[in-house]
Length: 260
Image 1 (cartoon, rainbow, N blue to C red):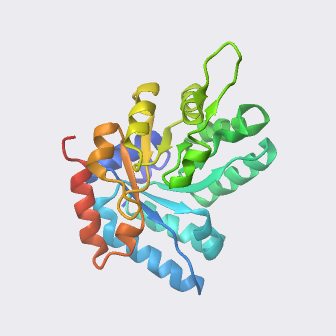
Image 2 (spheres, rainbow, N blue to C red):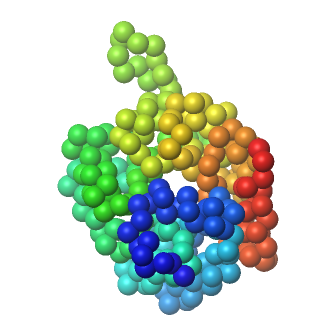
């Protein structure tokens, strides 16, 4: 159970502590689809409770929130917290400041401990209020730097000329720089691209963790990503659709803490 005395622990400390206690760097990605919502909630709770000893956090996608509704989402987050696991909302938030502020505050009010944002919105009149609210409330902000799907190279991998006096740089390099400048708690880089993980790791301070989705079903491998510099591994279908989710989570947890 989560210690009430640590209920206000800043996100970065919370996930590192849970990772250490559970000997795991695995984040369970819960993407619940279908109906009725009560059945989805039971399924989500069951998956969390079965795999909790082998996780360091739970990540919930926007479709899950839409399918569950706010009250059942709150109940799912409480299940995560009851198992001493921080809960991250993957919204890839990236709109104007007022919209970003309203959406992130609503998520934090539901109980989420961290949020994934899209840096394409920029800082001024963009993501600035999200970071300021998160800092005030001890929440985490994780910046999307490079997605795990093949088509991500069309945008994240493109060369960008920001200043005629400078050489073109890849979009992901610019996003990694912004994550550093903005003081993000983490950066998302797909495990399917270990060479990009390695480059991003060289750009970031040690206290900015790299969160890598794409393990298993999409072809990413824990050990390969770990060697490249990934700190946490976001895994969904390879656990949630396994015949034995508990065993699958346990196996991934052992891989995640093996010496790279």
